[in-house]
View 1 (cartoon, rainbow, N blue to C red):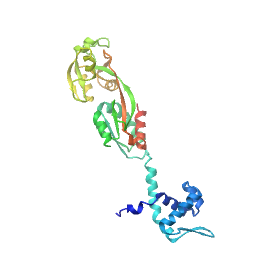
View 2: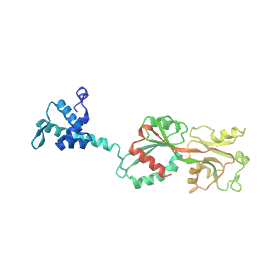
View 3: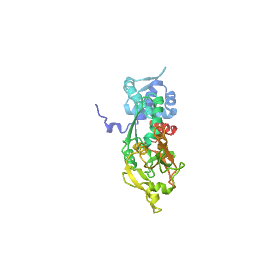
View 4: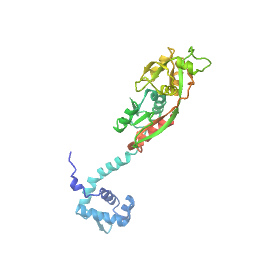
Length: 305
């Protein structure tokens, strides 16, 4: 493949080639200027620069109008295809057609976000963009930020209280915590739990950081209280199946627990203490903010909440 001689190209205004193409198409300075959005004097000045650049008259006046020189005809044939390719590249970079796209979007999220969002998202994709593919990568909070910066995921979905100035964020919904346990749990009376009953029970903790304390434990510690953690797991999806077969309790996001109640014998109860909820958000790198495909995907995520 031939290399581009940067020194020879450095002094060339590529917009001149657009003007040249318009002049060859119109054979008239005024109409060529209108075609490219230039005034007649500006187009005449561009023609003068083209003549100097190519050391040829290019277009000469005749009784029937402007006629191209042999060199102009040769240049026009050579330049037309590359100019069209450049125009196509510049035009298509901001276009995204869901119906025909086969693009692969890479999402970083926890299994909680997967269960809450992906079923509806994939249903909509099958209808609107049947050839678009989604690749999900399991991520925690810090890893998601790193993967965004390294361009290894397009979008992160989760809880991101702290992000960098070059990240964009949009809240999808506000989530709250509920107590989840099996139906007919011996500690539950009249669809409620007292704080004493809650503390006397054994608990399941989902910890993405794989430690043995969570938000509930911090709240209890501030009141000099403590609960007994019988099981700690790093993923949400297994929790429902364990709760359905044991007497463990768990404080979990409400939307997740509501999905489980459709196929597991579980019940949702108010927690016997105030526990702040959280916002589930989309996070993306600022460099992708105006990219058409990225905008479409974000809009689809919002529409499916």
